[in-house]
Picture 1 (cartoon, one colour):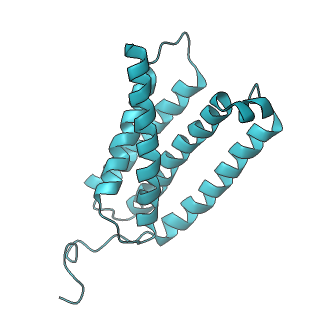
Picture 2 (cartoon, one colour):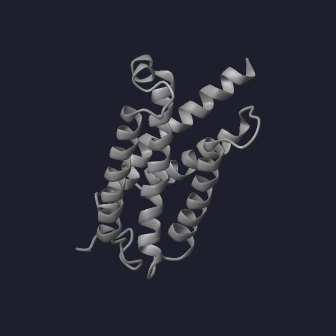
Length: 168
């Protein structure tokens, strides 16, 4: 019973992180969205990665490596976004961190889809077949392009203008 509940919580955190992550990435392109979406993304992404270590396992698995990498990226991203005033290179580090964090969630989501959805599992039963590799490669290319564009486009509001209308 506990394991089922834990799995459900982990899965819901993952889905919430992906949904809010899309909005957090959109905000990097200066689409005006409430900052709460980025905060929720960071919180649910940390929650997803942290709870991934709560599953019973024997030995180090790829999911644990991805989770550890995700937590390091999230730590740097949170530091960049909330402790550096996004000055200098911290601006693009923050943008790249948001995109990379979302990518890792999607990367794992693709792997889980191929493991759990019958039609995908039939196409790549060991996840070493071309359909799986193609899906992951497409995801990587899309996120590399989005990450590059986001790092270039992201221009946070100047601190003295934050919260005020430019016309005020």
